Length: 510
View 1 (cartoon, helix red, strand yellow):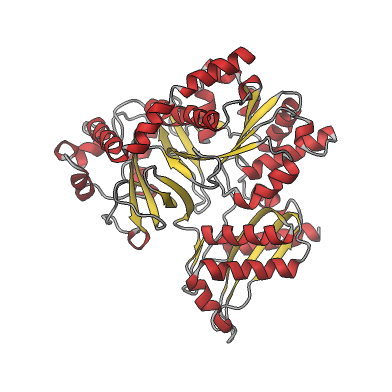
View 2: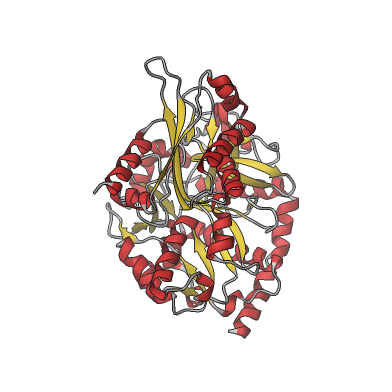
């Protein structure tokens, strides 16, 4: 495996000059992507409807083509799923990424084309490792196996000629043979349908492998690791995987979990952490500098054209949308993408904030539908993550999962926020944790601070701690087990709060 490690590292380093050009010429790279997309879309149903042949500039595009959500795009996607060609993209579509999201109970089916697999998802995976090698030239990660925690595949409900599943499953199914060789578990285990049986089987297989890296969400990674530790009797996973060196994480903010992973799961300074921003719609960003925690380089040459919409215009069909050369630092934008998967000016539901320009690095600051604004406080996920992280750091706590929502004003009483938190390690002082969380929210969000002033609108938040496994049981009850499913962090209603609290009470009083 040493020869393979050396060879793959050499091949990956050859990708770095292209990435450097993208970093220094973002506008030119995006213009090239834009032109290629418009040419590809001209002879599709969508392209003819919106006059792609007459589009010469980005301004033309923004005037002629509306920004769409999934509901607006679904009639076209449904035609693709039924086998019709050249609806959204010129090449045939054989795969669909199925995502239920966290804001809508209905499943979403995102087309995955050959181009989006090759030029976005696969390219992103290679670049991810190229950047890691650049940060850690002495890496020996390819001397062992890379563990991927993914989903499963199902038949397309409309046609037998295509399939649908989590994007991780679609990617794994289509990996080249050399990539299959260096990953674990085998594809038949990785694509098992029943999630709990799959996790159990993954634990049995991977506890005997030389795992050197892992890719997945931290929440589901912890579930798998707990199973392995229970089976082996080991105190931490490095006793099982002594050569482990890289945890690649995404989908949820890693900051609240960082202390847990660094001090309990992988208690070694020789383990590195790298963040990626990949989704059903494409592979968007990669942490290129491991010292810049939470910041990722936006990948501009993956066949994806980006637009950034100020939040106050996010619900408009023709908003003032900015290109990569027009964005500003430290402002939250709704992310809109046009892709080589046949998505056109599509709102993916995420908000991002740029932390540097040239190169363009960003943080995912939240979801356009995940916030609390019941009292004008405009609390977003980024605020919540900062508060949770600081409260954990100052009280020795380690988080497993959480969600929050409003308590409405009633009977003359002021409102407040209510939190449900599951700890992997409880704070040594719960009252101090609660106080720091509230104080931090006031520091990072002036609207929240104004509403909290002298408890005039918002009282001190109510914080519940629930037993270990509560969120897992709740997700299972909702049929949301799996690598692509995430706990909704914030909601402007009590839908999730009441359901989780009810589930917790049932667990405490069976």
